[in-house]
Image 1 (tube, rainbow, N blue to C red):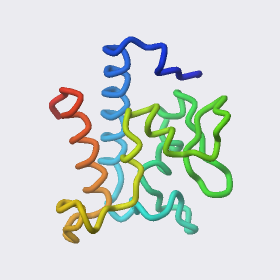
Image 2: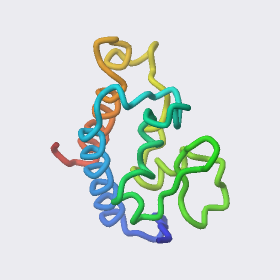
Image 3: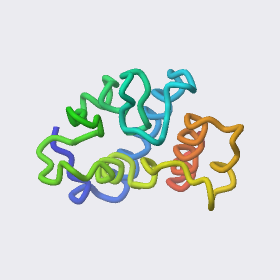
Length: 137
C-alpha cells in the first residue's frame, strides 16, 4: 500500500492518523510492559522492541505495508526512497515523529518519572496525540 498523506484532505488525514493511533494503542496494551524499551528499535534478544519496532509485527500495520529493516529492526514503509529515516514512518502514520523518540528524562515530567514504564510512556504519548487530534480515548 502506498501512503501519501500529502494528497489526503485534512479531515481524511486526521481520520487516518486517529485510526492508526488507536491500532497502535491496542498493540501496546497487548504487550507486557517489559517488552517495550524505547532505547532500541529491536533488542538483540528478539523479544523486546521499542514502539516503532513493534509496528511491523502487527497485522494491521503489516496491511499498511510496514516492514522491519532487516539489520536494526526499525520500521519502514513501502516504496520509500529514504529508507534510513524511521522517524518519517511516525510522521506518515501518526502525524508526529516524536512518538518514536527515546524517553525524555530531562524535560518531560511524566517521562522522567521512573515509576512509569516505557510502555506507559508510549501510551501517554499516543493518548496525548489523540487528544491533540480531538479524539477522546
